[in-house]
Length: 245
Image (cartoon, rainbow, N blue to C red; front, side, top):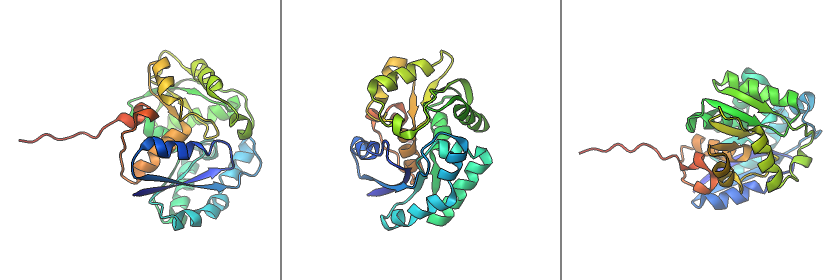
């Protein structure tokens, strides 16, 4: 069994994780610990506090006791808001505190975009425009070109967590761009796991969503690769097999 640890801020779409555990259909266990969200606001000052080292460290011991092999800070805005260097520092501190390989959802998006071969992406965000712009800047620093970015002006994770299929599809459609090789939906408060495959069928390209890439990133850290087509193109990539003889 492979146990993967996630620090998840507050309570919005945490039910994505048991759902994805079932969708993975193997010996993968997704262990989730809630962190104190503080003020629920997609505002820079609130996001900086939400992702502070002290708030993340508070949840680490529980994950260590669960036997987790890797830990991911399951929050996009609470990582990219620090900028490229700050996000790296956040992950380094988390890894040192946990004594485990560590990452965050922001880095998960950068790595997942590379995995699906998307050098150009469209961002369809729930956030206010200024926060969505910070995510675009982070992706640029990661070497990913953002051909379009759309914010939705939603301030709280609690509101995002109430969105269903219709709102998610409308968000993805509005944020897509003909030059984009993938569409990114960057908010772990958004329910998307049940819709990824249908979104990709409609848009005709890979769709990367926050909780989906977070789980994929934890698997990457643990050096596990799971084929789970229900979770989209990202989970259908197979390792190269060298043929000899």
